[in-house]
Amino acid sequence: GAAAIGLLLPALRLLLPADQAGHNRQIACILDQDAIGLQRIAGADIATPQQVDRLVAQLPRFEYDHGLVQTVEKYPSPHSEFVHLQWDYPSGWPTFQILICEALISKGYSEIARRIAQKYLRLQLDLYQSTGKLWEKYNVIEGNLNLPVERYPAVPLHGWSCTSIAYLGRLLF
Image 1 (cartoon, one colour):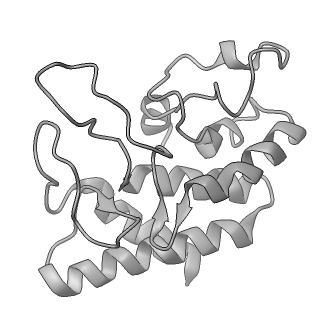
Image 2 (cartoon, rainbow, N blue to C red):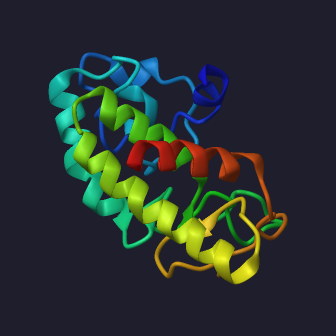
């Protein structure tokens, strides 16, 4: 819901330049300079219809066979004790998939939302079949759990993974 949305608004620096009527300044929480900004920006009517179209045009940079990555490339960690960033490439987190799909649907891009939902749900179900568990995050490039470890490895049966199964499944069926 709204609380999760407030926690997960990625940056629009790349996608919404600062010269666009100050829309960049409306984003209070910047998690990553290259993260896709569609998830709730579009759904919350922060972006104009033209900006939403530009955001959707950027989706191919983030979309892979198994869902959307959080970032289009690896970034160096600002923490000297960690080599990797938790939300970094090639991670695809359930909350991100849910919020992107919700925003796409709210702006009339239902077919794109369904395509993304199908990819990510298939990944979750396939890995559940092989491991007997749902996971906190997934490698959406390779379709597995091969992820860089920042503070801890992927956690089994994370609440958002259960939520994404229900939400994305309902979207598709």
